[in-house]
Image (cartoon, one colour):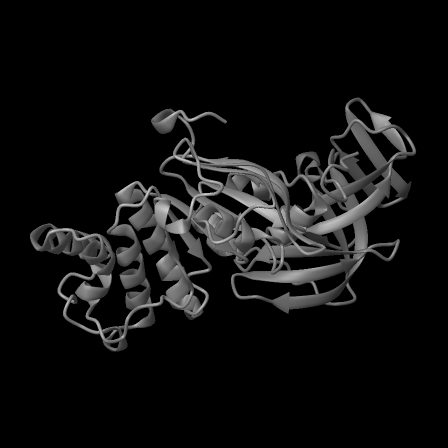
Length: 373
């Protein structure tokens, strides 16, 4: 990485590690975040995403590796000398100050002239759609409004990047979904680089240009939302991004470029993989990619994809979809999601069913990072 200013990424991490005593929180992470990008770090609690964010902010110093901001090496630079701002889940608003005073607090510390300060405050309140509320205090605002005040306060300083650590966690589900769209709108309107930390896959998929899925201090996969969902590279990513069925299978024969798993009549999985006969594969298939037909025998002749006969053991209504759990002859179970429209099946627990899906939906995934077959 070299100091190329406006031509390179806004943020770059170069083989960054962070250890606390014997525990490794972040393990050899390298990534680049583009200018004006909405970039998310997604993973379960303890995966290293917040520690990574804090190293970008300067609140934690890497044990090894380097952090770059706008082409400059800021690995050892203090937080107040980095042109980034951070937004937390608890907002950290001053209760005794008005909305306008909260938003303009950083500008006042920087001794920005009053007239310019007032103009920038008004401009930012318009961006976050809080015009006319500058005289109110935080206690007089809703949770979503307080969140937008925190965003305005962070953005009014015109940072190179805005770092957000699970900022919507305290909001109820309906408001959280509304704020996801607001955040994306604000990010696009300002052109600011957003780096967003969350454990919520829906948040990440809704807002992000790209997502780094983290586990155990490492980046399991970094890609755009559609690629992560449609082409997960590891079993962890497949399971963490949405719902996924996992099957460990052994290849019985090959047909051209496809591996065929056919241990018994009524059980055939076709996998687009270069795996020899006898080789083992970890296969993932999304529940909504599976078609379910009542009874056995469907597709026995002519269906070129995967086909498995089983028995429905559980059916759950989930609102927009119904989930049916199907037990296979070998004892494994697959979940099937069907839209609750006029064509939804009337399968009940105990009914025989046939499952069909296209070859392209049989995804080969690694058990762990760096362990693809």
